[in-house]
Image (cartoon, rainbow, N blue to C red; front, side, top):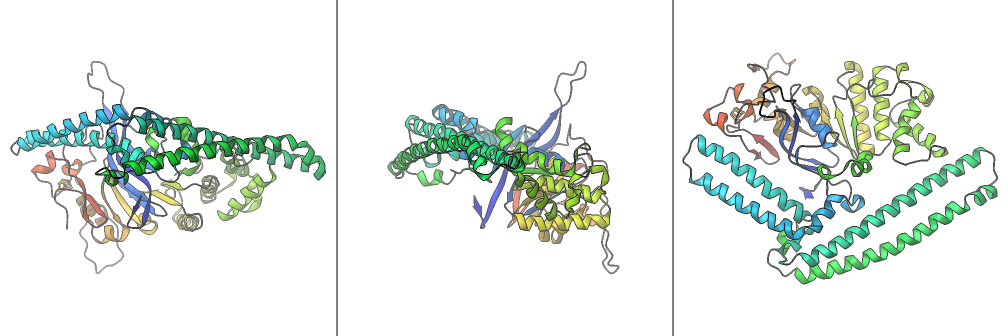
Length: 514
Ligand code: SF4
């Protein structure tokens, strides 16, 4: 997943998050709040992607949906922070088992896409053609999703006519992989509990020999499990060399390489079960806007930070290394060691936010959503917390999605910025580029409202007329057309494509401000 030498950590494709509204009496059609409507974006490893927009535009929902705190309505959210083998999710088994029928279904979807394209091309310009274009986009998306589901797992094998043997061997690899991961976790759990027992015995004043004798059976268990793991490992190697041989055999197929590039080890978060997702929670963290409400008032700082570490089995609760680890994280987050036994109400807003950050970072996450993380703080404290987040990002190689309605904060912290309007990202570019060349009329209006201290700069403030439309029945075509000063007839009818206007600069507008 390299792109311009940057590694994609999260790849979002056509993400939708709709919340159903209870039907009122006599109402036939089910209505939805379309909080996120067809969002597509890549988040690169190590970057801070700022997300900005008016309140209610769906930024927080997007952050939470990426973390699968809401199960997403549609679309793909690929995560590349770990290999799919580590999770071995059930959806992979389902696809591999049904490769043959899935390829047939895909052919059906491709036929539908072709008919939709022909119908669209045959129509003269006008309302009917616009409607046909929407249908074509829907058909294209269904076929693309079905295609990616398959090729992401089998790559160039897609070119093989009879997929049955491919299905069999890949399924074998998958099942063995599941066993391998289960065993690995079991060993880890046993080891953690052994560390806890050792610490308890040490605390009770037992001698080294007594500790060794008491823990001998646990050590034995671990060593037996490790031998079992080695057996599975060697079986997996045999299966994988079988797969490699098959690849060599089919490599001469036309288009093998063309499809092979789609094969990757990404995990589609949208398809994981709650149990599978639980394993990844530690990687994907959220820092809340209101630190106070997110901290349990009955727990001390030490307990708050340890809670996740124990739940994710980083330590046994009796392990002496736990407190050492917690103190280390506290220090990194600017919290004095003696705070460890204090309760959240004994702290100021800024300190509470530091506790929230320490709690998230203790788990060594890879991706952190900071949802209005500094908005509730005094301006003087905001910069301290922002600088802390930036320092930690460097030290821990983190990737942030930084959500804020405050453009100056976004400008300061972000490498790239996405601008959201009514559930869609309408513009995405590097921070420098977006502030120097806003290309979407909505971005232009947002930026024009930033106060300036430069009296010589004559800046026109663009007043956005009207209220934000309802996300339940958003305007047709471009959702911004009801408030856009550049809107024309096409804007009311056709949804603009989110396309690359300049290298790395994406915009969804029929009349880009170039
Ligand atoms: S597509 Fe039309 S309405 Fe939408 S932002 Fe562009 S010019 Fe304005």
